[in-house]
Length: 69
Image 1 (cartoon, one colour):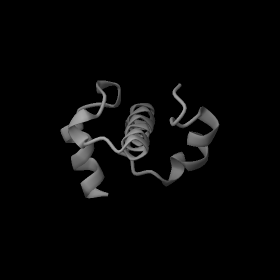
Image 2 (cartoon, rainbow, N blue to C red; image 1 turned 90 degrees about the vertical axis):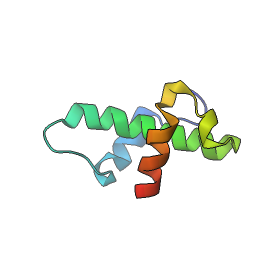
Image 3 (cartoon, rainbow, N blue to C red; image 1 turned 180 degrees about the vertical axis):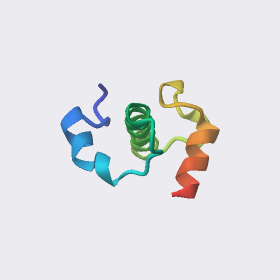
Image 4 (cartoon, rainbow, N blue to C red; image 1 turned 180 degrees about the horizontal axis):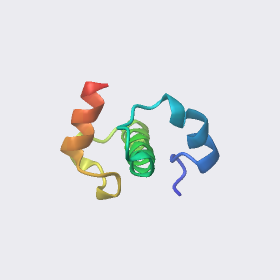
């Protein structure tokens, strides 16, 4: 876990507030946590979307999801 990423206890406190698709609970939690960690990385570094690390998923999908929020 990197410095700016959510710990397990931090994520559990906000997990119920995040949108999810019903029927695939375990997958959604992992995707939501990865998405949030990617956003935190972007906001902390000030990097453009295209420089988002592969660790956090595709930059286009992450940007699209952020825009929908």
